[in-house]
Image (cartoon, rainbow, N blue to C red; front, side, top):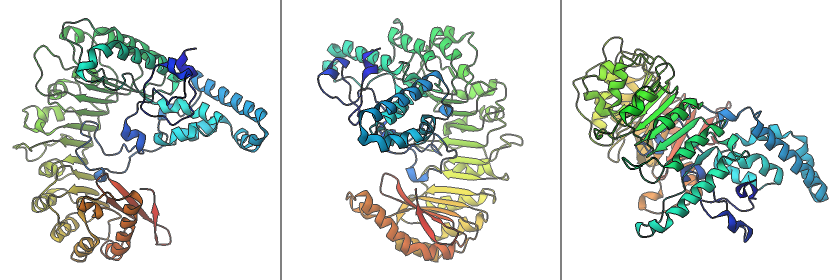
Length: 548
């Protein structure tokens, strides 16, 4: 058994790396837990946000998650040999603990009354940032829950020191990678791994031999039986590595600046993937090859996210993608001569996202030709093109991702089909004009959900706008960004900020119900980090605070 497998966790895990030889000297914090801080410190929220532009929208504009359930769906059935070992280990620890101390007899009786298989199902539904506390509860819980901390792993530690010290640290850095791999691919941990990130600090040099360490990582991926998501950055795609990907049971892959040569992709078949993310610039050197075609399977692809317009030729030349439902592409694609041809190969798309980080290009496109994107019902992007894609067709959801001027947004919204059910937007400036709300009410009589991400409004602002707007009987959910004391550049403790939101809710509830008598849910966002407080209407008609 490796030294990494003998680690016991009796302190809170943090992002610390140290050699295993030091563990016998003093009690250290766990070295291999390298999770995204955003994932570690807050519950995950997967709904509504594109994987290629995480900073585009404020958190408040995100729609509720479309799916629920366990954090790792592929681990719902703990019947693999790895999980059997976990369960047997938990049983033995529980039995051993009851013999050692009579003071634990009552606690152990509770543990023994519930089979470890059920505890495991419970732990799989606990948010990742809460699992470290579960591992410290008792030895049985530690044996079951600790491997679940590693549903997401990263093969490479954080960045090296400054350039002045980097030369002497290279061998130590590679040693740390090997130590991580020894632990991650150990029999105890590998069944828990669902997502793996391979991101060396720099791209492999052109013309130089491939990094044997990365080759070792790729060769070891087959030891992860539940691996479904793979993220690669700065990795050269060689025939040997592509052959590994062909034999994995992946559903999702993300490639950032991963290139190869034409000969590498010549005869390789498409990898059967459901979700693909390409993070490439449009300006690519001639000796670099974008591997789009290799990862876009017409018979498997369901979601495509890309930052490059180079995917258009691949889509246009391919067979129809009859399962592709989500298409997330840069807005510059609309100026391409083959844009409509590429869209015609995606008959099942029901959600189109046009992301932009700068100016919005002009296009002569006024509406989609007959038969192109016949199932489209959802749009995310600048307001300029919402009507282009949703005119005269059943519309469910529109998310205006770029802050808009109120009068321009008000002029473009009426062109969208009146069947719209959900609308979210942000405004430039500091006011929400009552005229805009009036336009929304008149244009979308069936609207069920409304989100105003910006500007931040005080209770007086909200009451003033609502009192000047006509009633809308269909609206059931509303989300508003409220103005708090943080507008004075003060840090407000979360509890106090939430209390301010509750106070604002009490002041605005009469006006909300007068304007929206069918209201079932209210969410107030506050602060710059997207925190929120939510209320739901109970069967008695009273609003009860619930989890946001």
